[in-house]
Length: 264
Image (cartoon, rainbow, N blue to C red; front, top):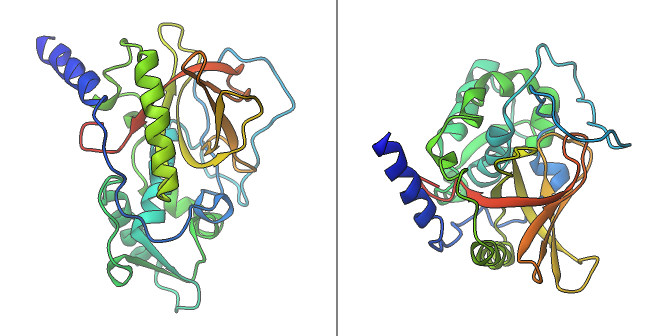
């Protein structure tokens, strides 16, 4: 228990350190090209009112529910954007070899710098992650990692320690800096002790806010495949808020950056 508490305190304080974005592939993150064509599914009932927003269906029928993978999918979108080289006109490879290359990209950490173009993992026959996951969704789901990591990993030890308004403002400014340099960031959105959201998204674009003293961002939400969702930072309250969705009533959330180092 003492070790866990020490690790939690370390994670909280290292979470205040400013890290620079690592080099990307030299192109902007595009929702229609760089996200998965299938969605993450929920396991537990969530406290959110019904609304008109629904999860888009995948291009192919899921052979089994793909659950508890929001962290894997949010990080995976960045990993493929950074470490893969899609070659739509190249000859196809065997599914066994394609599975091996998917695992290779999965094992290239999200925070590692992108390799030079000729050293990235080649994915022949596809234009991007969306195209790959439309045609080889089952292969991706089988090779992207286990769902238990959504709940159990060291990065989530700070959950009982709500980030301060100063931390949230610093994160907003750092996020804007990353986006100006063309690099998306994976964020963990949660509330505690009332856990009405515990989710990972990929922030990839700053957009015009709907009100003064605010900053708005487009995010890839792994629970959806149809369009980006919106995350807002309000400078008056120095807090983030997230869209109303089918699983969350909308409103304030705590935000922490994820997969920017070995421990964070």
